[in-house]
Image (cartoon, rainbow, N blue to C red):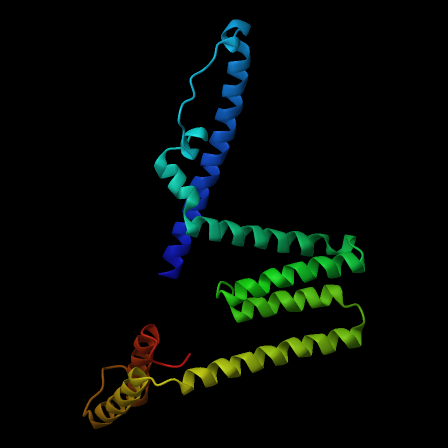
Length: 223
């Protein structure tokens, strides 16, 4: 579902970009035509004000405006902007002074932390970005190693905290999953024959894996 949602969002952005480009061409062409074809006498005539909406002012249909205003479109556009800023920072880092690199890295770190808070960036992704920025912004080797170790320690502590939080919550579904595991073991061990080409242990592992995958999809098993 996530892949489908992302593909849909990318499609929306593509449509949005096409619409924006078409608008820029249409508006500029209309302005040039008006400036050429409108005579001074015509310009002097008073015009009746016409009620217009934002969509009409921009030459958009209601459906096109809805695409532009879609929160999913705006969210993905912002994310793509952020990724472009990261790419630019890493590409140009060597040409910046240490002060400039530190200043830009601090701004990117704030945005990264916000995306992480919103769950739009995984812990692994954010760690990789922070490690790369640390290597660019801290030149002293000993200080850099301490900073990198601090990042890893904080990441491990956060992961442990999430695990403990998960375990502390009542989860009747998880208990049902553990009970299903026991039933599968009992069932397989009591079988006279297992599917051809598989040992009993192989078949047991397959059945347990299938149960775990189904439980993970339902949020019943620990990640």
